[in-house]
Image 1 (cartoon, rainbow, N blue to C red):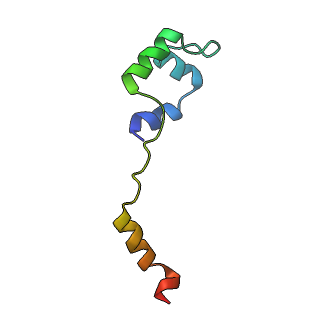
Image 2: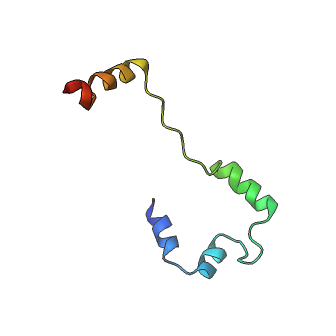
Image 3: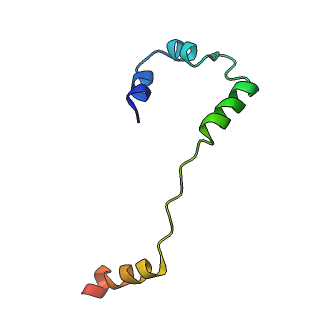
Length: 68
């Protein structure tokens, strides 16, 4: 989270709507939403990589029950 994100969270919704050029009652236009999607990409987190077979093997060997 950047300082701009934190600053935006402390402001009133009206101030943020004015800065982001949107309307609080109607929301974004389809054109504006498409522009933001093109500029920023989809609003989703990246999936973490799956562990390799070697890492799965090592995790099995270092398990609590195996160490006992």
